[in-house]
Structures are given as C-alpha cells and as structure tokens.
Length: 165
Image (cartoon, rainbow, N blue to C red; front, side):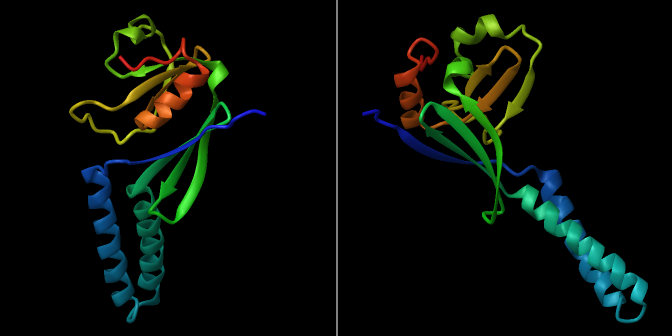
C-alpha cells in the first residue's frame, strides 16, 4: 500500500496600486457613460464596455494562488476574486532540481542561469522571508510561498533536493 500525502496552501497576492487605480477608474467611467447613455445610446455602449473591462480588471486585481501537493506533484491554481479558478501549472517532484528558501546559499550555483522566472508568491518580502525558489528541468525558476507542512511533505519524497536552511 502506498501512502499519499496531501497538502494544500493558499497565498494571497499583494494588489499593486496601479491595478486598484485602474479598477476604480473603469468603474467610475462605466457608471458615468451608462448615466449619459440615458440621453445618447452610443454612450451606453461605451459604458457597457467599460463595465466589462472593470469586471476583468477586478478579477485580476484580487488574486490568490493555491498550491496543492499530492502524490509527488505540485499543482498551482490561480483563484481570481475568490470566484474563478484556473490551473496555471503542474510540476513533478522528480523533475525538480532544487527547492530552497529564496535567500539560501544552496541556490547560489543556479543564480547565473538564464531561465524563465514565474512568481506564484504574494509578491512581498516578509520578515522572515517565507518564499522558496524551485528550479525545474534546467529552464524554469519558480517562486513559491509554501507552508512548512508542504515543504516537509516534498522533502519526504526528495530529501536531497529540498533545503530548509
């Protein structure tokens, strides 16, 4: 019998000021054009378009990442405005090169590589910094903010690849 470890972790992405401003601006413009649309129907169309834009900006301004570790796989879902969920990535632990804290000396050998970087963390450096870096298949650097429980679960199946400093 094989025991499967299941760990879930949710990380809220920090909203940047630009997105918050854009969301407010499109909402105000949508309301204004809809009010003007009572007089001129063309303004109503612009107001509806602004409303749609405001909705999509709202979805992308309120982001959370959900990490799921199950059976030697790490999946990352993007949760938009606590209502829409989208799978953004799936990583196999066997294909991972290293998982270590973002400021760890263990990843010094990897820092000069020219790799694509994806950030599924909160985007903020906390004290202490809880973000981890995972190098995957030689061409990808992934920034995560897993719980200690998740890091320990991954370390159980790949003890030589996971560092907790």
